[in-house]
Image (tube, rainbow, N blue to C red; front, side):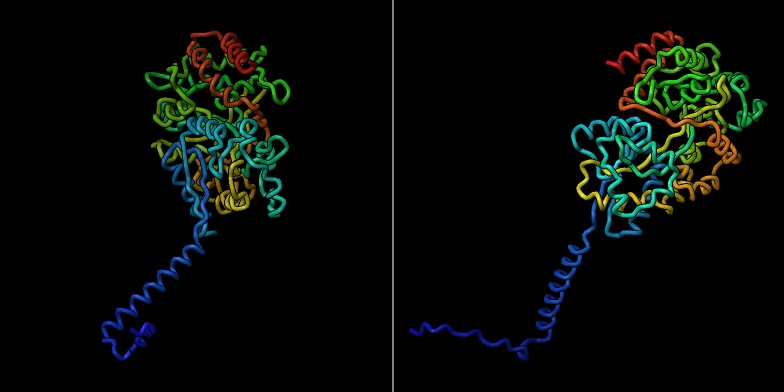
Length: 425
């Protein structure tokens, strides 16, 4: 037996039928195309980042998706997965995520809460320096507010003072003069009384610090001892808070509050037409424009014994301590807070821009008179909203113990002492 291997017959192209040749050629072409496509896909695989942000309305969520589109327009290979939660849930979940090291790559922060969550954010200063990023384009006040433990924790996208939003239609219907730039507390109270009848109230009061502190500060009170210690049992604060609470249980120009209410209550009452005035900031224009059917305007905080004083605050986006690619995350941040994004946030009414050059754009779609009100407030009636590392606890306790005070069920001094004791424990 001949064990010599028999060589394979040479490939005879001429022996193939046309359909066989086409089949072989087609399969080869498809295989090569698939391999090429796979290689290209691997080479251009999108880079992924996750972003955690608060959002209370569909209109607000749409704005953030549009901002993401700007990032992906500039960098098609970068995908950002937006994860949102309502305002109250956001801070509860962020606390749990920080404790379990389960943070998204990009996280959003309000200036008042920067001291509490600073350890969850990477310091941006080294990235700002290495990327030669220009911080001078931003308002220095909000940069300072987003700095904690000696480091910048987020790039800002907005800032603004807490002011009064009012329902122009209700003022007109009840023959009440609209607020002037220098209106007083007595004028505010007189207007609120005229606007209160039936199921309608002149004002939506709430013990959340953002809402009641402007009135308290305007009456000469303070809430901090030094820069880092809460003091709400001093006589000035107790007296001013008691006056504010009296809007509900004494003057009856604001409605009693069920114990389960949260910080969204005043906005909900106002948009439903059940309250003529409430306190918020420029960031809420996008929410109210999408949900109301009446004309509205902005007004200054009424003058108290120390004039008209309000708090200025803002928010920004930072890189979490668990982000794996800080350089990629910082690249995304620079676009999320870039001039084009700021312009869009301004024109939609979602944010009064932190970038100085884009602030004028906010007024284009804002209610008539807003520029005069904000300019007047920012030029003479604002103080930085300073907070402490336990500010989230402060917010929760002020709501829990403050509602009974507003309803006339507990003395102000007793409730404030109970809050102070828990904060000091």
